[in-house]
Length: 94
Image 1 (cartoon, one colour):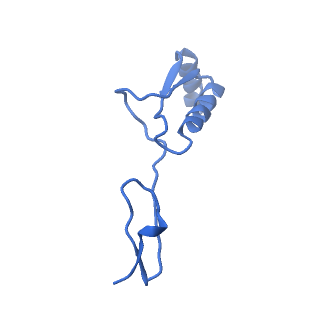
Image 2 (spheres, rainbow, N blue to C red):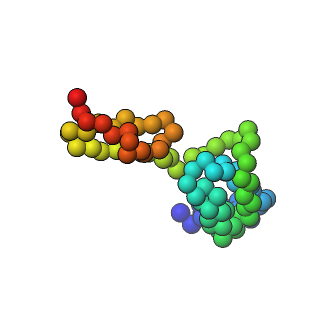
Image 3 (cartoon, one colour):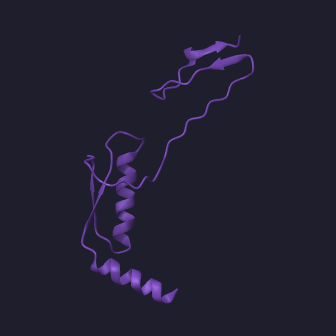
């Protein structure tokens, strides 16, 4: 364990500044999330800049949005592809 921790510290010291590529306005608070992650990486010794426009780069997903809806048995709700929840989309069950 001690040997791997020393190896990690040396690798971080040798690493040059990194760029965290993040989407802009694709997810809620995506800019704030990217800034927080970059700040944490910088805190452990890996200088990181945030780029808010996505290009053709490798991705490591850090979050995935999942929506769930529940209704009474007497009601039916059909989810929308744009993920908006509208009260007028609720209908009586057949």
